[in-house]
Amino acid sequence: MNIYFFLIAALILVLPIYKRYFPIIGVPCRKNGPEMTNTLVLDIREYKEHPTRSDLHIPYAYLKRYKEEIPNGLLHLVVQDRLELNLGVRYLASKGYRIASYQVNNCPCKRKGR
Image (cartoon, rainbow, N blue to C red):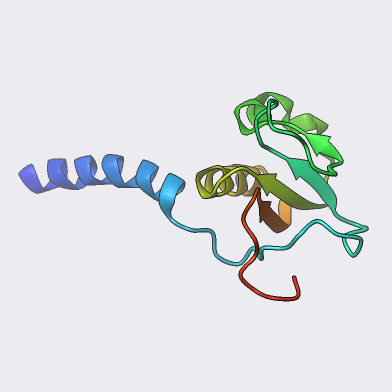
């Protein structure tokens, strides 16, 4: 009985940590540029941040409320930090949106040419 309690407690503690801090795999980092013509640029930073050239600006805190306003198609996310990236990509992917790429604010992409 104690082992079941331990497993349930460990699962309850590990899942939120995984959702927040485990890095996103399979979504490339790209700068928002002219080659992204068929991709919707979604800025999920706070309203007080200066928006870049984005098609839609919905902060992460409001995604649950305004997810119907996001059209289906490929999305390019503009985020403030890695935590916002992890949460935003996981939430949008769970709702059926396809994330093509992302851009972390004030952080250059590590791969050259992107």
